[in-house]
Image 1 (cartoon, protein in one colour):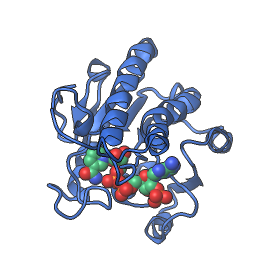
Image 2 (image 1 turned 30 degrees about the vertical axis):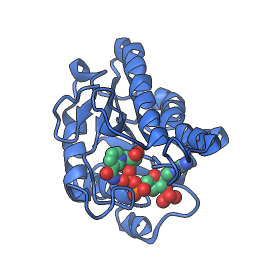
Image 3 (image 1 turned 45 degrees about the horizontal axis):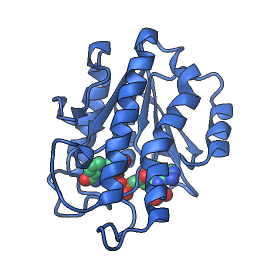
Length: 227
Ligand SMILES: NC(=O)c1ccc[n+]([C@@H]2O[C@H](COP(=O)([O-])OP(=O)(O)OC[C@H]3O[C@@H](n4cnc5c(N)ncnc54)[C@H](OP(=O)(O)O)[C@@H]3O)[C@@H](O)[C@H]2O)c1
């Protein structure tokens, strides 16, 4: 069975992705920062789950993770860890340091983590890198506010489009995806869909992704999203 690595799995979409991939029989490597949540630890009843600490913005933490995975054939990487950023994101209130931190997590870390895991992905017959982005970064959708979050997701879309082009000759599929507006700590209780619905769409998509889809911005339902 294939192996999937999911970042930011203590809660929200990452936790539910862990549950659903385990239920399908995958070997799952899930990462958390600090300590794993009780919910994530409880999934260790599955012997096919391994948990490792990863602070995605810390290159030492990334290197420590890679060192622990030396013999793993990695089929799917899901860059899920993300932050909404400060609650002050209007033009009047935005803070440049907070903005940079949002970029570090949402835009830069997905490339640094992907780069570090490339050697393991190259041992797979069908390697895929999925980055959980957001339609809030779409340049074609005009909306107000949330400068830091929106710009960080627009940036990671571009990063993944460039990476897709670069990795296509190696047969590595790279797609940023919009997971829907999801009822998590980040999405809030008024969001459109449950975390189970979002994760099941992402799981289904990640199992069927082809090299022809590489470099496209997709939704959790498998449709193409405007950039
Ligand atoms: N929910 C939505 O409606 C929605 C919509 C569009 C896109 N997204 C994207 O979907 C992804 C998951 O969101 P979610 O709704 O599940 O959010 P969430 O419930 O807030 O969970 C975010 C996860 O990312 C982890 N994380 C944050 N910063 C990290 C860092 N520096 N290093 C390692 N892990 C880190 C968190 O760890 P801790 O538990 O330690 O904080 C947490 O496990 C994010 O990329 C988000 O931008 C969500």
